[in-house]
Image (cartoon, rainbow, N blue to C red; front, side, top):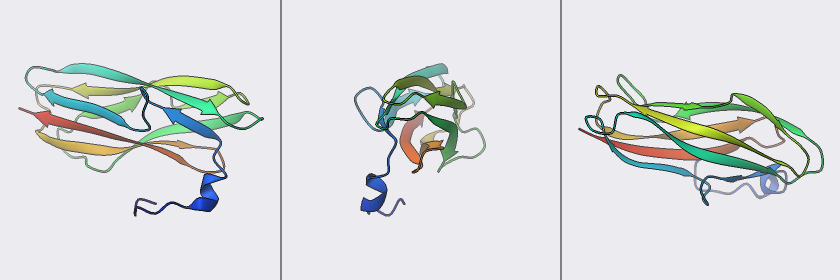
Length: 127
């Protein structure tokens, strides 16, 4: 995990594919804490690739966090995707005037299938 190597045995065990605006990651872009404060969202679609339903728990795992970091949350913390079905949820980014300048990144984690799915996110905060 996270070392630039693909676990080929895990690839054959995935239960879903992720689509975040045509990508497998979430690039929120650059935001100015003084001008762009508020909440922004990106829709994520989870498409089942198995015949039976799978229940997922969704969490945010920031790799860079700290005092006055932007807040990353999800619109749902759990859901079930029907076999061969799809489900959508939102990843929400909240920036305030007190948000500290810097690059912030981490993963949106979907656990519950045979393999934990991770959707990387990134945002740059400027003054």
